[in-house]
Length: 241
Image (cartoon, rainbow, N blue to C red; front, top):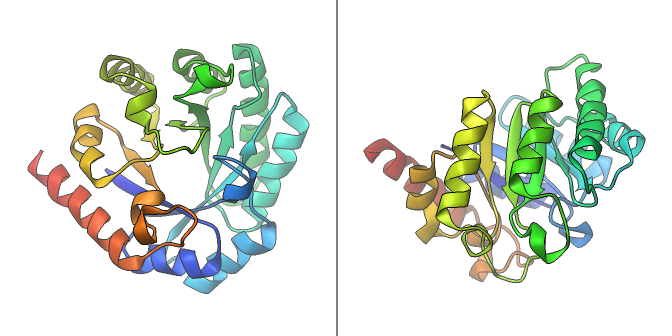
């Protein structure tokens, strides 16, 4: 299971890399769960850590049904050095809208010279804001031929992925995605005590921020030692499993 750490700056990206993160996701927490950061922050993070020393992702926003905006954001993320592009289907209300947005993102990424992994992200707490449910997110990801399907939480109030969805719903999402050949990423206030459950579910990627920040505060900055402990625990438990 790979560990994706969400960073908001070069300093945080360097801390995530020092702690052994497999994927460093540059985002902007002031603009939402999958808030888009500035191209220069992504570029500075990639160059500051060193190209080839880490795999970088970029979130391109909690998106609505505007495929053109999504495509342009994807081009900017790739041009800035991201090799994973994460698109949040937040304001999308139908499967077809999700397909349209993700088709635009996929085409924009495939038009670039470097290989890019396309991530369709939905929200486990969709019922709290009227978003697509996980089965609809999965259907859109499959139809748009994405590489990864992800569940996160939109509302960052301390409630986790496991508070938003029960085990049976998460198992159905993961197994359904794997049956279609999609890689699965799970995130949403994931803490150390959730690692075993993530492995049992079969998640390919675990996304984390608050658990690797100072004092578990997602706004307090990433602590390299906490990243190191989290990644080590993931590898230890995955190896045992």
